[in-house]
Image 1 (cartoon, rainbow, N blue to C red):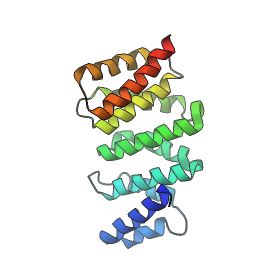
Image 2: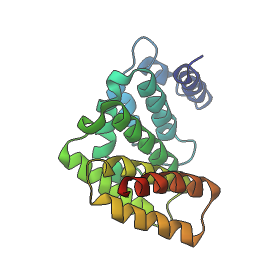
Image 3: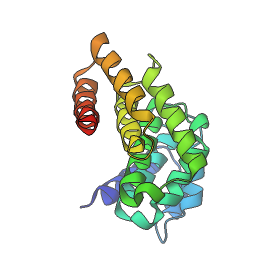
Image 4: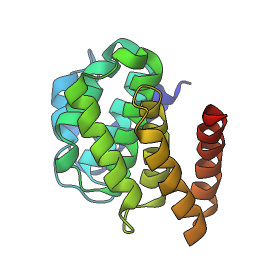
Length: 186
């Protein structure tokens, strides 16, 4: 069973548990992406419909990559509206996947500017969750491939994180990308 099929079943079970059977209509015969994306912006709390929806979009776009760009465009436009850390983490995953699939053409210059700004904000905000910080490091690393000015700033921020002491997850991801950044210099 694919990750999408598993999440599809979880979404349906969640909808049934919360007495929202009408949600099945959005994904059964055909996937109504626009409507599911709109659900991603509803009340931002743990185990909310928004979180269930964004998980579904993430798995769906990993399975059906031709819709990845449309989903990434939506999340870039609404990054400021997403307050739940779980939803931000998943948005980051979608942005990372979009870059990995579409490369340098994944984002317009304006979108790139927005993602880079949010990435550095997530990276430098001490209240940002571990998973969002880890994704920020990877997102910024990907953008450093086409924006040389990011490399020294990202290197400094990663070194700062490591000096502060951090969780094993951030430590591992930060070291991985720090090695790649410093290897690029030499």
